[in-house]
Length: 325
Image (cartoon, rainbow, N blue to C red; front, top):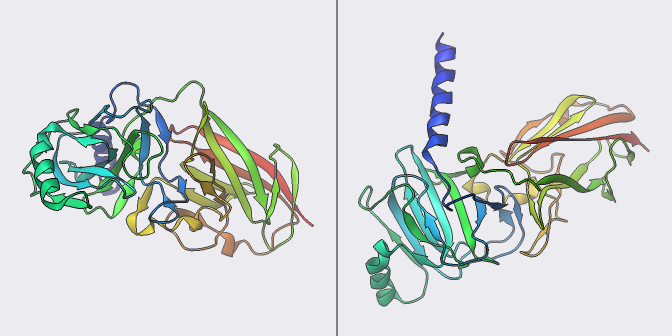
């Protein structure tokens, strides 16, 4: 009985969290970058994308809304940092939300902004606020879209964090974003033991080591845009061998991208090619299953299945065969 009560409470908390948040961009919010995507450039080096990007149709000045009732934790004034101008709120459900790349802040903050800028100038300024001293209502503008920081185009970068900001969570786990009709899954290429191939379902590929080192460049395509995946599960002969889950990322793994992506990955604001590394290489909490050490001697022919999911929780199956040379 106690086990079922605990399960009920966990599920109830998850539902409450999900119900508490609304999109920070009004209307049908279009996701243009997903949580956990590879980012290969910038002031902080290669890193995970710790939030989602929401389209403002490449316009600055679009109101960015508080995703739930909450109080102001801090503002960051900085044109050059990776996030640019930032607002962070905390909410009664124990989570924080972060809104980045703002062109300007809410008029409610004008007197504070003007005061600190006049005193400290244009250098990076971080202003922390006392708990529950400055409130925003759900749907109230906290600022306006822009491209401060490392933003190629004006948009809304949105994060959900734990109260101590040690963990970032996929906002798509808390807010339901509509899947566009033109969204589709695509495998751009495979890499097996450093050899690159086009993917054909059921095709036989060769491997030579103790186990096939498989990497896959797969995305959800959306018009001219691409969206990263949320989970990837690798099966050998129907046995789950490896499981990557990008549902949450600790902040101390911000730069640990090479645990999930290969060093052939590229993201420069104009092109995106990221190969998911489906074999153990370095430690990460993002790998939930790793049975490579238990495999023993593999058969010479293996049926490979990779089950992928996107931010809309749609699943896609990639199937092929590998044979030992």
